[in-house]
Image (cartoon, rainbow, N blue to C red):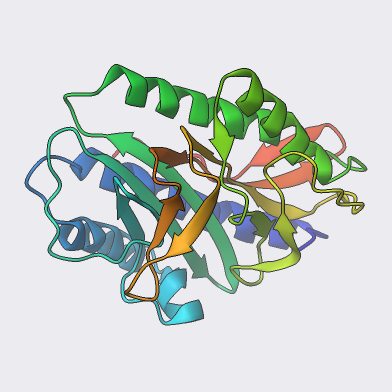
Amino acid sequence: MTITNEDELAGIKQIGRIVADTLQMMANTLEPGITTRELDDVGRRYLTREGAIPAPESSYDFPGATCISVNEEIAHGIPSDRVILAGDLVNIDVSASKDGYFADTGASFTVPPVDAKCARLCRDGKKAMRIGISQVATGKPLYGIGDAIGRFASKNGYTLVQNLASHGVGRSLHEYPTEIATWSGSGDRRRINKGLVLTVEPFLSRGAEYAADGDDGWTLYGMPPAPTVQYEHTVIATDSGAIIVTLPGMNI
């Protein structure tokens, strides 16, 4: 989607705030002993309260309101009776729509006690996302996002999952421009137009290079197996840089 007027901007900002607040609420609820289904229910209740529709269900018939991936799972984990344990690495991905506008956000969280290597991976995952966002502005090449993230990953001894990409968003969950690389060397010749709405969501890993399908038809696993984190914002491109719309609007 490309923002062309104030009503569209307001619509994207509204749903961006809703998914961000949902993610924050779920993160605040995350603790040992909770199941991923119970955590998903927290997200569903908040989205419903705000008049939003979970996008995984509405767009893809996914069996959950949100995607919750634990440890060896790196994306699209199905909410279930799996119990969160101390020391787990948990990724929560929240996407939803309201009044015809979509936004998408996600983050990885550690459940104490936190391993030092895992804490560093999370810290650097956030940094990789911010580096990618810094490349979003009117007229810049889309490949610049992945090239900047790739340089950071290489310098710090990480790999990037290269078959899970960023994407356009706004009037649907996934739309043009599709397959925006968050790794180096994509050769993408497309440029960022003013008002473009897109996600920036690198999957930073200590060894995984691609995502492989699991037996349930949804859950993805890193290959080769390795700790992997994902951080994601929905942003709007402007002449002066990116507007991040998936920032929490209130303390929950």
